[in-house]
Structure formats: C-alpha cells, structure tokens
Image (cartoon, helix red, strand yellow):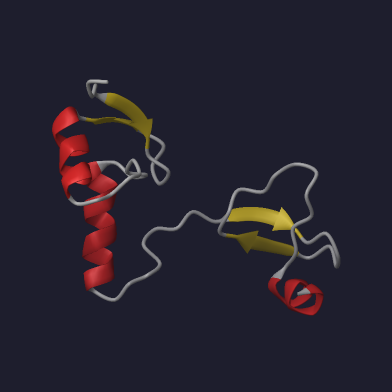
Length: 95
C-alpha cells in the first residue's frame, strides 16, 4: 500500500499538522513504527528545553477539585468526567 500524507493533531498545541510521505519514510528507515505526537514547532521547542535541562516545557495544567478532600489543585493531564482526580497529598495516601 503506497504511503500518503497524513493529517495529525499535535498533543501539545492542538494544531493540525501534516506527516508527509518523506517524513514517514524517514521514520521507517530509523525503525520508528509510530506517528509523531507533536508538530515540528513543538518538537523543536521540546528539544530546546530538554537540552537546557528544563523538563517542564510549557506543560498545560488543569484546575480540578480533589475528589477526596475537596481542595483546589492542578494536574498535568486532562481530567475525564466520571473518574476521580486527587490532590498530591491524597494521591500519595491512596497509592
């Protein structure tokens, strides 16, 4: 089956980007069997921040209320409706 350009959505900025045939062939030559999760700009930003030792490259935080103690807190993932989310202290106790 011939390769075709794919439209993907960046997990970091949410923008749609094109995963070209040339990029797909490059990934195949490198033995990478997955599609990129970030657009080129966000991949470059991530690399730049990692080279400076900054692992927290503009991570989006979500405001939530802890399901156990009711305290306002932030989490680095998008909460799913119907699933409890805990503050750091409560999560440590439950874990």
